[in-house]
Each structure stands twice: as C-alpha cells, then as structure tokens.
Image (cartoon, rainbow, N blue to C red; front, side):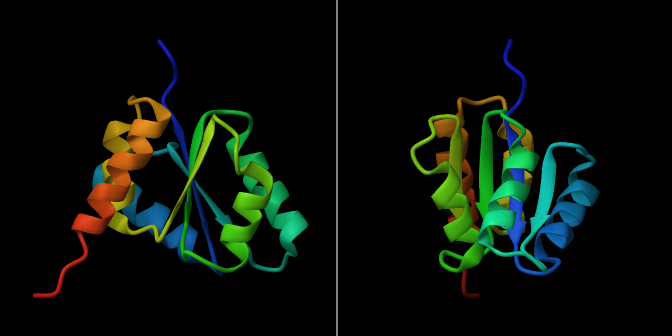
Length: 124
C-alpha cells in the first residue's frame, strides 16, 4: 500500500501556519500538512523551502493566492511533475477534506479538494 499523499501549504507571512494549525486542531490529524512561508526569502529560496517540505513524496501543494510569489515558486519548480499537484486559493474546508481523502490517487485527491473548497464558498 502506498503512503498517504503529503500536503504542503504555501502562503504569505503566517497564513500557511495558521491554516495548518486550524486544520489539525479541528481534525485531530497531525503530520499530514506542512506549512511553508514566503517570509524573508526570494523565489529561489521559496522553491527550496517547498522542495524540502515535499521531500520527494507525492504531494498536493496548496497555495494561498492564484497569483503572486508563492504560486510562481511552486509552478516554476514543480509544473509538469506527475507526483506534485498545485492547487490555488486554499481554504480551511479544502484542507480538512484533504486530511480525510489523502489515500486517493494524487490527481483524484487534488480534484476532490478543489470541489470541496469551491463548494464551501457561499453568500448567505
């Protein structure tokens, strides 16, 4: 059996850390999500931080915004790699869903969490 897919949350400042902390606190699942901040680094260093978090494992890289330095770093280093999927616009609902579906094949889990994350956005 394959090991579960790794989740790497990349964000500006402390956004990734806060999202990971909240997801772990709600779910009770720890050590499945790794926060990465762009704080104090250029694109090359951010790419290195993301690569260190991935550590050669199949991963979904969740990026806070659909543009900007975090996305550019993830795409520059990992676009086209079959064992890494990059998902933008991360939210808490998406991360919680990931924690309970990371045994799915990589492409399927990425598509699944995008659907859950989009479905969680509503005007009431």
